[in-house]
Amino acid sequence: MKFVDEAFIEVYAGDGGSGSSSFRREKFIPRGGPDGGDGGNGGSIYLIANRNINTLVDYRFLKIFRAKRGENGRSSDQYGRGGEDKELRVPVGTVVSDAETGEIIADLASHEARAMVAKGGRGGWGNLHYKSSTNRAPRQFQPGEKGEARRLHLELKVLADVGLLGMPNAGKSTMIRAVSAAQPKVADYPFTTLAPSLGVVRVDMDKSFVMADIPGLIEGAADGAGLGHQFLRHLQRTRLLLHMVDLAPFDPETDPVREARAIVEELRRYDEALYQKPRWLVLNKIDMIDESEREARVAEFVQAFGWSGPVYAVSALTGNGCSALMQAISYWLDDHPTEVLPPEEDDDAPVVLTPTPIDVKTHDVKTKQGE
Image 1: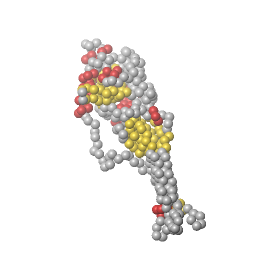
Image 2: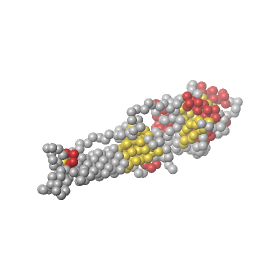
Image 3: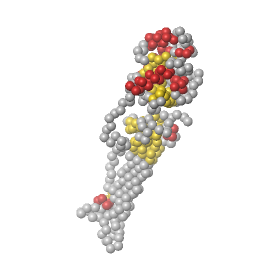
């Protein structure tokens, strides 16, 4: 299945039904009075996060969704039936925003999270509501309100604790294969990974975390080179970044320090908040370096790169150093739990969007003589 992490859709909530203008017509009741019922409310459109859905591929071709309108009111005080709501299921981690203004409407970051993205129109009043001591035969009624219409931008950001960052062929896919059950494609050419992969790393019987492998970046990705930085959004939810560097490239002219700096610069250009996330340096492929030279090669790189944070030298292919790295990550995640915001009032209530107010006019209906 093609990995689709972005989509544009149009949603149209149902219009409200019009109210009815009618009068009682019963034997022996010559002045029965008004009995026009209200119109039904139009159906609303909801987005619901579902953990069993992985991509937005369902919205790649089908892009227009409409809820049903409410029924019109009828005589004998009969109210119109409300239109049925429409529910659209999306992957957990989907961010919904208005395509025109860019305003974020909802962030569906948990299973069964709901957001109303288009509110149905209210049904109009029937003439039953207009009777009074001075207006005993009202002929007014209200048409139903128009349902809300929006163009939405759906953007999927996968949920992971740790994200792998680096150049193509830095060994990210090999790493996630070595420490989890994920099986991304591994080959000896760049851009083998074309879509993000998630793997669950289990470090103990009751301890685990989720790691994300995204396609590699190259210098100029911010300007569209390579695959661009379109997949970097999947690192925005992570708590820790692992910057993987190929310490023993096949091409002798390749400078690992220059490549590492290029990745950091692309990260900074893409998103300052992502650039400021905690980041560890992971020097991969030490199995390609003679054992007597490894320590000196690592120290030389760290000094040239000007790095003062945590450094781990590993071999994702042989597993050398990977276990210690995973244990260190697990301890760090325990010490840096996800920030939980205090709940607000009605925190569990669905997100309700107020539609743009419209002018609901009152119609005066002329009846035939004698009615």
